[in-house]
Image (tube, rainbow, N blue to C red; front, side, top):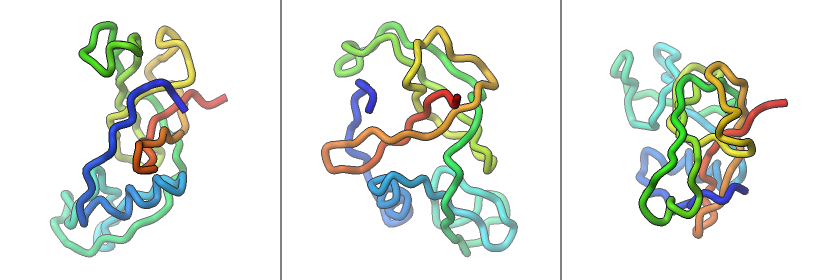
Amino acid sequence: MSELPAPDPVTTLETEPFWRATAEGRLVLPRCDSCGAVIWYPRRFCPECHRSSISWFEASGQGTVYSFTVVRQAPEPWRKVVPYVIAQVELDEGPRVLTNIVGCDPGEVTIGQPVEVVFDRSASGRGIPRFRPRP
């Protein structure tokens, strides 16, 4: 678990399967049954073909750093953990997620770096997906 704050996520009917899986330490994603697009952020319809037939599958939890920034100044409660990394990670399944890179010095993060998901726990036990460098 990282030292980053882990606020409880706001869940909806659309996101409940995602947050339920994170509490179990699993990363699941919705996929359109019509066109096969993997969807991020979870929603009831496909943003590609606009159909509403969606199924959930377990993702690999692996990806690469697409873009990132190192935060050196922040308001509370983040101030006590600076510097930290905010990144877009491109999952092996396709979508890009906004997340944090943990488990390494912020100066070691690079674009294209292979990463894997880890979960920090919120007060309610939900898993907050963050990524660490892969060996």
